[in-house]
Length: 207
Image (cartoon, rainbow, N blue to C red; front, side, top):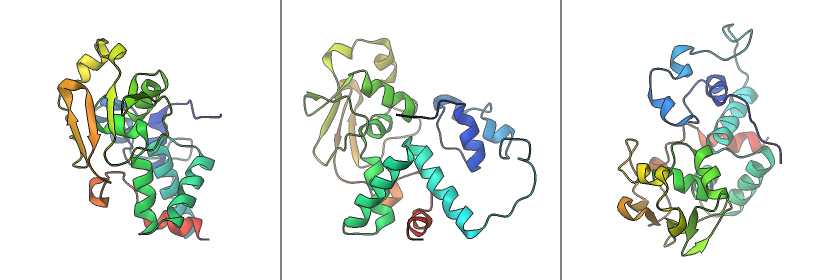
C-alpha cells in the first residue's frame, strides 16, 4: 500500500501547525514550523486566500496526516462514524484515537505515531495477552495493552518506561514500570489534542 515517505516536517509546514510527526524534534527550537512558519515550495511565502472548500480540505488533511492514515482508510473511518450515534466529528476522532498505534504513542512508549506503528508491526505488543501487529487494530474500554515479554528488555522500552513530558490522557491508565496500559473509557473531545476542527471535516464529506 502506498504511503508517504518524504520529509514529515514538510507536512507540518504545509498545514501551518505542529502535527508532532517527528517525535522529540517537535519539542525543540529546531522544529521547522517555528523556524519557517510558511508553507513549503517556491510560492510558500505568497499570500493566498483559501476558499471554503480549501479550508475544509486542509482540516481533513490535517487530521489524516496527524494519525498517519491514507485517504481511503480515512474515508472508511468517517463512514463508520456517520453510522454511529453521537456527534459525527467527535466519534470520528474517537475512532482514530482508538487505533493501537495511537494508544502506544499516547502511553509514552513511542516518540511519534510513526514509530509506534513500526513497533506494533514488529510484534512488540500484545492486547489482552494476545499478540497484535496491526496498527489500525481498534481497542475498547477494558483492553490491556502491554509490551510483550520478549521485547521488555530492549533498550528502547527501558528508556520509554518513564513518565512522558507530554502527559498521559485520563482515558488511559498507564503503569510505566510494567510497560502496560489499560483503556479505562473512550476519550472525551477535550482529551483529544489533535489540532483539527472536526466539524469542517464533516462538512467536507457532506458536500
